[in-house]
Image (cartoon, rainbow, N blue to C red; front, side, top):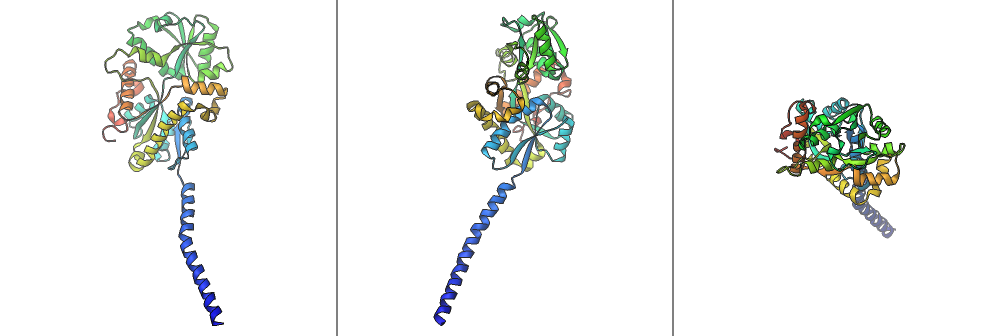
Length: 342
């Protein structure tokens, strides 16, 4: 009997030791799982169609790669004011917007934001019946229909004309309420053209007779400024911005977001088929989505000094046309992340 008691004690002690050494391992595993479940939800705020298009690659790539720092998504807002309020309240860390909007917010001190990266260049095109357009001068004395919701593309075109030293009175811009209306007006007139941005152009073409792309505004900007010494401007369409509070308090999250965006653009170029579902909201054919992403939407990633030079150079041209677009003054280097110690 004493022998059996000793054996029973031995087994109990052994079992206790095994449990003690097992518990930390189990506890660590549970903690890891909880950590994965508790990744913060980080939304990229947008308040217009173009910004949603520009942000889609980042969110799709982050979800595909399972970002270790956060779960990314797109948050749609009804207005820029509503988006800014969310950033000021600390409930929104990042947003995608036009560089003009970022400049106005910064200059008017409506929010402490910085531009983190350029994510998309101008993707506007001149379309029409006549394909014999070889230079911007071929558009003179012909009506060019422009949508009121795409004023910036028209001003980029004006800037190109100014750089070419073209008399502006030779060019007739006719304003329409929507992109669709501008397209239809050009469709009705064999001598007319329309200024339409992608991917809206492909959406319109899906239900209307095709007009030919006769002029690429982005390419013409590059050609118009190619001879300018040390020219580094780009026709920037969308930028990623962050609140300075996030820059100071969550530096690793900012770096994570930038890295993901950079890799997303690279992945988009190499494997566009992986991103078709991310652009399903366009409601166009799968092949059209792939062609858009590769050839016509001009996704890009620029940060640091390259970003600053591209945006500030672009601002100088836009400022000459209408200073009000930027909030009356050219922004200083405080607007750009990674510059002047920010």
